[in-house]
Image 1 (spheres, rainbow, N blue to C red):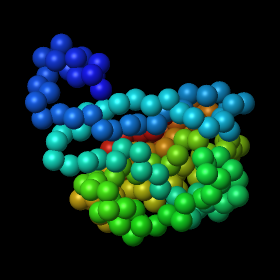
Image 2 (cartoon, rainbow, N blue to C red):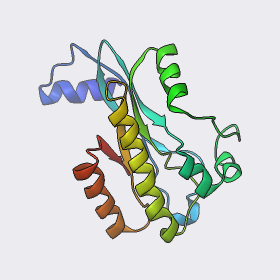
Image 3 (tube, rainbow, N blue to C red):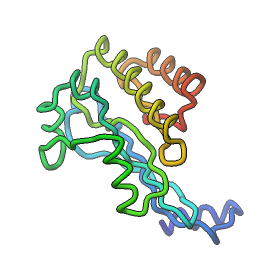
Image 4 (cartoon, one colour):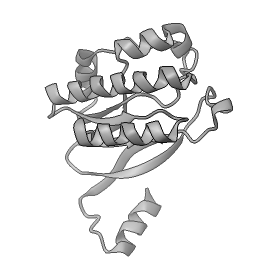
Length: 171
């Protein structure tokens, strides 16, 4: 946080009303190691007066159904799958003083064949965008992209940003 603050000051940005609380997950592993846990995280500044949860995973039904609950649970730290719902997410935001949660699919899911992953990411992005559209004051949405197909990833980025108006993309 100190290094980021120094960087902002050096650039001439005001840091008077900035505190660092946000983490954005980035998984840079090759396909053969994609199943391993642990991501590299980047920090982002958040204005004072509200907490923004930049690492709020959603679990659309299609995501769980396609990958499988047991397979997804196998890559979570406590080996259990969260019982996720929009209402639970809203309740958690209230409990922990989070003013806005940025939804995304965890990039740590088990590796999938491209023919399965491409349509799954589209459906998950549509689900995240719908949740944000229904609750714009509480949710933002980072789109997910096929991890191992560059051309399809670029198509999904264009769709997510241009059509769904996603707030960003998890890469």
